[in-house]
Length: 445
Image (tube, rainbow, N blue to C red; front, side, top):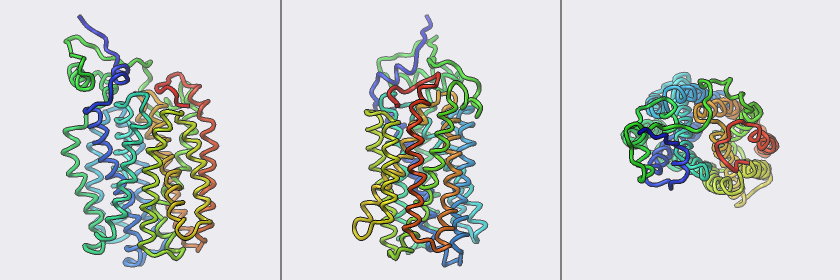
């Protein structure tokens, strides 16, 4: 006799367990590599610029090249994940990251470096969209924000590793060594991913995958379940049309989609300006190279701690309320950077990292809860893709500001404005969640 098995109750009532933590850990390792590769150019830039005699404005274009790839990769991966699945897109994107980073180490001029950084960025954009969707779809509703953010903190950890390893690698082997490490590590990781990364259960059910394959995964998540021939797995939400950008504005999602796009744009503008130019800004403020690199590491450490704290707060107090507080914290601490000196600078930089970077991780978790399964990757990819326009503008604005001799204090004051705007925009998100037809995560507001 056939049975109809709803997946969501199974995912919600069972503990995360070993199998699901394997999925999260695998995605976390990918996020570490993502953070390493995204921020590696920021630590290579101060060495490469004088070596190749690259003006700051042109180096801004080099730093932006990777973000162009991230924009392309985020938009492409969202559609591909919703059409062909999360797993194949993730594996292909990791291989692309490896190829792009290794080719970056072989670049002989600025043009070649720009092309290879774009290629790497396309892979990085695809990696993060697929990881976010997989993690969100294996997490229970009650802990989705915490689980997604726990995975996503791999990004600043990777950035911190880049900051710690870049100087000794460059000193011992040259600037190319940073990209070689960033290219070889994904190849090693592919073997782990092939073994431990499954396809999304919800996507598999919607795509009509073989029931016995779905049942095998369900039995590993919920040992009390035993597959029987004839079992049919269903996703309880109403079916949507095929994933498309138009669907992001259907069924009461218009306001939320617009707000997420604006928030990601403004947040990523500030985040990518700081992760790419913070060492250079502080050097212009008379800091030593070692002190500037340490400050960049502290920014990432603040992002890690802030992300974890925000994830716990989001699940207990509501993600939108937590996100609003995070953005106001970011605005205040970035503004305080213009007025900090001495030993207080590192503490303020860590708090700014908690606000700016932690909030970006938190908003990504909220985006995964906003869209239903069949358009989730498209929604996440579009929000991150539109946000990449901001991350394109950030490095360019940073290069322009430093090139014109703008005082570091003035740069920090200006960066506080978009973070304040993000805080105001999040105040409207509660009404956006209330207007949707499909609500997948309780207590989001």
